[in-house]
Image (cartoon, rainbow, N blue to C red; front, side, top):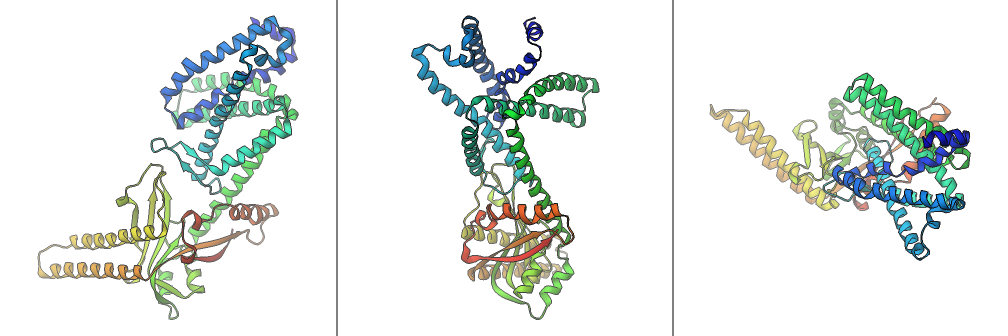
Length: 468
């Protein structure tokens, strides 16, 4: 009855005031960002027995105060506080604002870490702060950028009114987007009854649209800010994802076939040089196109050569015995291998020396197990099979000694330094996106050899240009 009477008395102004009313509910949505940090029961208990009673008492107290002193509507919270409690309350309010910001930061960290794993965001450092909860992450670069942006926005807007308008639009847009995505999940994943889905969409969608139309009226009074941030962030993410996918398919389409690999190694000008070579690539299968480039520019291949890929798994730890997966590339006499190193989100990549030692220990174990498996395919029915198994075991031991000897001669780390450019005849927009925006992002973010802690005196970069 009070709501109906309020709209009857105030008309359009009542509708416009909904943009301020929605700020009473903002913050509750941030609890769901904490699901990566706390379990559901902890959030339910804290909301039901601490947050909701506290907020309800606060709002009822302010409403009672305004009923008696309506002239203090512009600063109700602090005016309603007894004078002796002003400074303690002021300090608590500042601390509460800091705590509340952590929910937004946690949400940003969680979303961007997922975008990073999907190849939709440039490489940044992701620190997992918990061994139990995968969602507890910290991204130093994003933390710094959000802090800097907060200072800039505060200095530019100066009043909480405009900041509130920006925040209100942001939150209601999140509500609306969540409702639409939840509807899609109900349809395609949960396969709920269509009547139930329609009722959900109509009730929540209509309510949110009412608030959204109200808060959008404040677009020019600070509401444009989240749209500007979103536009820039989405443009960067779309650019990175588009070029990242194009680059991956470019490499996948140009995998070196076995016949070409054998021809490369069989060239009279190509020598096998002492030592172990580790060539890093994102591909987990096949020989990357940067390898022929390496052989063309420097016609030599290390005596033991490993095509290396590092993959992060969504589990806390990977046991050392399960860290490396090997398979041969080409015939045994080539002594070329493919390796995938798997790490959990709390595992730290070892220093270069420790990494190469554990890698080659795993390689020798692979050679031994490969020989044992081959021997198991033969029976003991005659002396010929026994002699064959003995020969295979001897060959495996010889290969293990060879790997040890080459390890003593040194390890060289090779990475592909790919310059991605738009192919001739590309549109102007594509040339700007690929040649300038993507190149700027790639050159100003973490380089792969730094992320892998490779010593510079053991690093060899192989330049190559991808035209996409």
